[in-house]
Length: 433
Image (tube, rainbow, N blue to C red):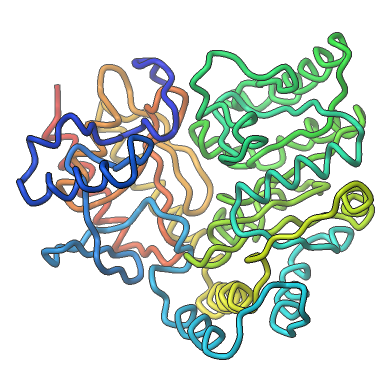
């Protein structure tokens, strides 16, 4: 992998520089300045020339002028932008009733039962949240209460959320140089055979410092680290080390769950291990805010005994309607199989392109989540912006932002894959050194 640039935070990857607003079309520049004035400096836009979308459908986004853009980046609308089945389900429920979860409603219970049926039987309790950040925050609290420890192990460029607890275990967003005392960072598994040894070393380091392990928190595709998926199963030894040390294993399925890998419904299932806690978010509502934490009853009881948990907008009937509709679509449209088929096709196309393009290195991934190394002295940001000009959208990942992150909706097709690789070929030709 390239180490061309220093580490960047997640929001900084491919971010628009507000100082360049004057170089934009006057009308667009005014809208950018208005946003900055209203939302402040922490609000980030993508691309050297920001985009403004007004409509979406399937894998397509439409700007104010009616131009179409192929979306190969956004996993929030997991079954496709504005899927009519999700839209109808949520609208219907909002027209009937939508209240917090301290009242009974069959829709919430039906969804909980259906979702739990996709997971190991021991993981029989679900707590709803609104976001993946909330899910990981609650999971960390559960682990700390159950184990009586506070040590957390994550990978060096992981992202697990934006609350106070999850920001501390999201080094991809660190502004400071080092982690908090209760956090140990391990290298992303570019060498998967060494990952378990790194986890064991982190556990030993906790013990030397007088701390104990509370949780090993992992996204099994290592999405923000640069996408490291293979070989399937390599995480099991690390999981065993964490359990021997008395810690819990939290599977962050926000990005890798819901059929994304094409090999199993859940990322952890692809690696053939059973976590203690599973966290869900973004894709489960296809754009409607819903998340969840799933665990064993005794783990959840430890939190209840100390403080309990309530979230006004979590698990509402409308949220459950969105979640149920997403499960319907994954089943009816065979999106697990589609992720496997189209993902394999796209990886093969990208590998073929990499053989003729010096800018591209290794192609990694599973299903419809793919990372492509960008080689020195080429710039991933330049490639992403050249693709934007060709109306194809992708992202960036990795410690230096030098990995192309391709993560489209699950309805992506072979024709979409062809359009992406053709545009990438053209973009690389335009920026050839």
